[in-house]
Length: 71
Length: 185
Image (cartoon, rainbow over all chains, first blue to last red; front, top):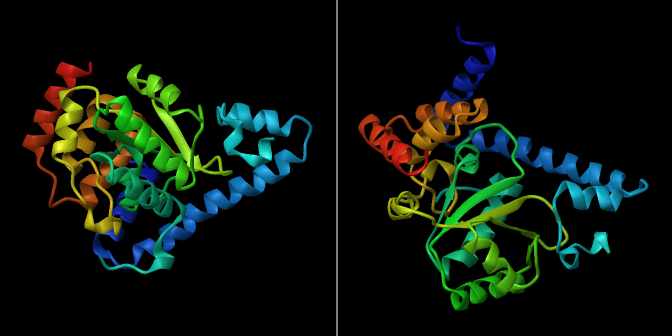
């Protein structure tokens, strides 16, 4: 049985196919919001004890030279 | 390619800027999740996967230094020689823009005939509005359905099958699946 989630994926895929010049605006807002949320979270995490270490561990950053907020 | 600048999201800009540099040094393809996302799939990702032609150390150093010069940082090491060892060991290396841990570009060398075939049959996808080389649609569908197989990958495949219905070639997909079984499983 198809789930509501699968149906939603198909509906959106059809929208993209049939609206090649308008799907991108909605999609861009969605993608950018994910990263905006992440950077907001990172800012808060950096204020906490061991925030830097947690971020280093989360993103497996070994080259700290490239990320000034880790120094 | 018709588009307005405001249409480009963070992943699009990151990918195009990165690919512009890579293109000067070697052939590459974008594979896996970002193919579906750039084609309109609404899901998040933290990384974009790229396969590049195998390079020798000298050529790799030039590429690595060019990336550094243009503001991209390797997350594992600041040294081209060290990063080359990762690639030779078939481990991916990850790049981000300086000071930003996300998004990241995950690079691997082409490792077998299947990767070489993917690079040879790469294509640009007009629907994405990105000037970037992608692994072709039939190849992506075959990998997602035959090798990767997670719910997320199967949803990506469903999305690609619908948005690129005119490109989907079942015979080609089945041939690629046979190659995946021979070389990867």
